[in-house]
Length: 272
Image (cartoon, rainbow, N blue to C red; front, side, top):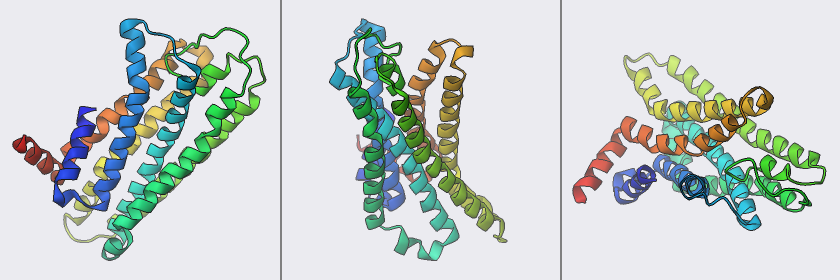
């Protein structure tokens, strides 16, 4: 929370960082903060104070935010990959393509697409009939953990989450891979000494975060598919870590690897 708040404040106060790339990074930090505030306080309340109860409305709200903001983060990575593609493959056209107006439209697209596709998940769960036990075998309100308590058939519920999740995350991943394929192809054609390394360094932070985000998500999916072969607490732990580690790493990686942000943070600290 502190790292993301520092990054947001630095970008806001430092005039040299008022550029589309850093606005997209601000969006990523905002999404991370909301995800942390949605999941971690309740998890800590359970572990520290044994406050295990949660209302139906709060549970479904948590479910919606987790589903929508996770896909929003993936979509933001996709927009940032497009930003890097234009910067390296079409540098002369970059100022005319990646504008403040583009960032506004991209933000509206990120929020609208993922919010609308994720909304049916808690709606479908809330319309089920709950007539058995009311104890979720999890410390966060995931769709499957909640819907398993229902006496109704949850096949459609499972199917919608699977199709929507993989459609959103899958399309983002395909576009990210395509963007980096074009970037790599363009970089390999650069003949000037050191120019290729410099071009790749501008994508380094972004690529590291995408790789980590995708790896953690893939491990989480695999452990859920192999649930019968591993202890039941492992997927729960991985789910919590997926809402904790990427938000912690994002501002640190950008702060360490991006000279402009590092200088902005130093200026901010001197002001304080």
